[in-house]
Length: 346
Image (cartoon, rainbow, N blue to C red; front, side, top):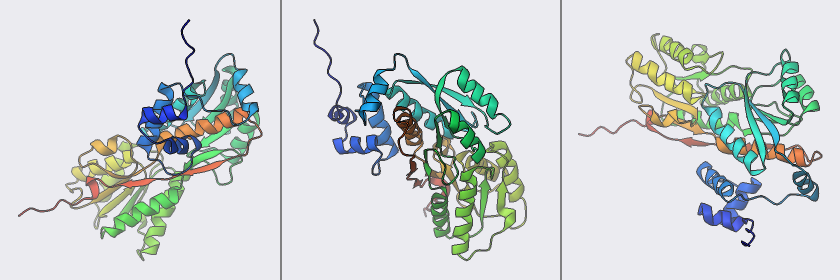
């Protein structure tokens, strides 16, 4: 008879990932700062070793042990075309696999007009809970969470009655703007998304606050308000702005898709990046590192956002009386070519 395989320990995960036990502990308990690459490395090692975290309480352990088949979770995103959501879904799926849940992706907006249809779908597939990345009204949150465990990721209102995980959009935006201002640029345009979303409102607020602190008057013509994150819409709006007298010399875009569209528009209108115009994006998705020039951007810990959202759901399912949590993750400004003026060699 072959010996019984021992369960992987936190030390095994640390050795497999090539990090310290303390780092693994910070990842699992969401305490302290861990960069996204290390976070992903630890989670992939945990999956490879089939590591199972100890239950927080006997109730959680018994709930897991009673599951004869995998429970189903739904993760709902607003759009399939925005690559920002891809890494979040990967993170959520990694946590789901760790806790032995199945996970299905659903795409679409959730409003009061279609809420009954969404709830019917959740009932039909016997979903145990739903993670949303959408803007939800207070009424939708109240109605939905009364019937299904709900966790909100990235998009939520202040004092949401359900657990949430996201970033400080205002502070992250202001930090990016302060960097642009530090380069000496003063004519800064904003390419923003739909104002129904928290990220758009708060990133615009950070933009305005940075200008106010610098004593710079806001030019309303330099604020491009898009109805959705769409590269073609952003390109058209930016190209039009650049053909007007006294165009901006810097752009802050609230997504990398829009920042890439800005670079495309500058080439179309014979401006150079970064010599004539600098560009800063947001999200640090793959496109930001492969454009020419590459894009300076605010990195969101996308994998972690998804992973933690599923962890919060697991806590709710295994301990319904668990306290509601509101987690805020750190961001980081990644400096690349779109703001780095080349040195002239003589």
